[in-house]
Image 1: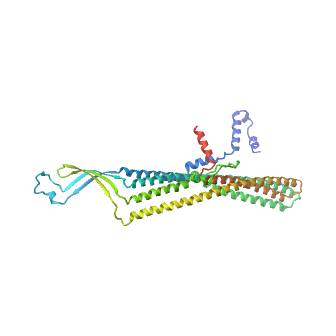
Image 2: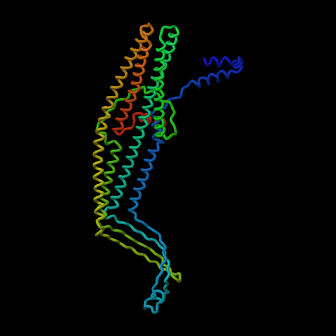
Image 3: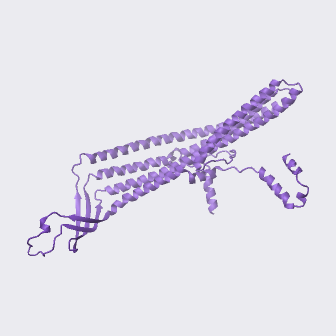
Length: 454
């Protein structure tokens, strides 16, 4: 009707005289009618993995641990420093010599001297302390990498869970809109019937009340949707996410999930690497109680009053044996051992929790599948009931209120089916998370990436 009104006011020569005008006008009308394309979950997961601040922070922590490992390895190579010094003496024998030994020339001594040169120290790791510290830093780096993987899984599964929630909301919204349309049509029929005196006005009031109640539910769902979209946008690293989301049409696939696969979980790998780092720290703390050997050397150029200087060099081998420090080194060893024991207990507790999560996730997946099957059967029954009640209403053997109840039951069944399918997808991803895997849609992301590079 709107198109007919617009064409009605067009000049008669605009289509025949200018052929391109008609084509342009049709394209404009089609442009207004083409809906926005829904964003796929695989595409969103790819953007989350690229832009989320949480994963970027994990990258930064990994780079920091890489620098810490380089710092510990540098201890093998020692240190070399440049220096400059000023020496001031208050000794008469150096300032005013009275006689000279037979084999000593009459050089002038100066009480103010300057010098410059280099010094160096090379530790010889005979007690294994440097090796143990490097080993600890290397395992901390492995823990940081595993922690980065854990953060990655967390943000990917959080994004997938939010997206599936939007899919469920889309199904609820669709069911409620169909119910509103049905109520609107019944209100028109009842209005005509009231005018003819065949129906009491109270029937219309009930229909209007039901319609407003459904509109209220729709408004509440819209508010919930905005909150979910805001959280998803935060994970994607954007200010807002307003793209449409399609309904979940396909059912999740079945995959095997042995309990032994919990070792693939990055959070378990984090604790395992931290345990190995704790072992190395115990060895490093114990090595501090053992003898240490260092090589020290220096070269200096000294100058005095006459500007003539001399070169001096020195090389020292220092063997140091700890004797007494008030019990500090022994306490450091006990501290490292206690920390290692705590990490071992944390690892055991995490393994037990992981096994329980896998078992619970498997049960939830089975329950979600059964729930979807029941919801599907409920929709079929509700459709048949609604069809029978509509026929009875058309024949005048059923009131409008009874028909509305049947249509409300159908809308509820459709909503429950949408929610059940969403819950099934979420249960599948929760099981994958318990096993240390990415969301199922992430593999579509990987396939798309491979296809774009070929």
